Length: 172
Image (cartoon, rainbow, N blue to C red; front, top):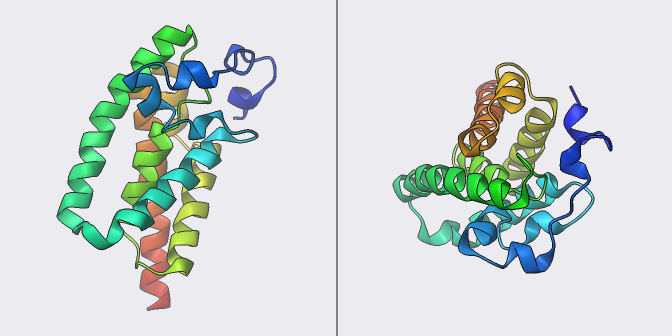
């Protein structure tokens, strides 16, 4: 389950430099403005960066626009992730975090706009993204392209949304 995080995994043997992360539009998008360079846990840092951007933009974004941004970021994220993976020579490098960003935006759009629910969204998404329940684990292992990078996080977001919806139902 945690093979992806092993020191023996080739993904963890090649670091993305700041020069690389900011060297092209696809790399900037894939690393979400360099937030994927932060260690340890670049996926968590990317999720946090996505949450911050969401909170900053929330006053000006309607739910319809928010969902449009999620869909567009999924498609652009798949392109940027594939291009960045190809340029690095490493599929699904840890510094590619646009997948976490788009997914946390999707989860945050489904919860009340309170700090407590946003924290719950962050924690639920990170748990499901790290654990990768099937079919997310299958996608992570077998879809070694930009779409696969995005899809496993989309599935983690679906799991998080389901748990949070249940929590909202029982706590209401």
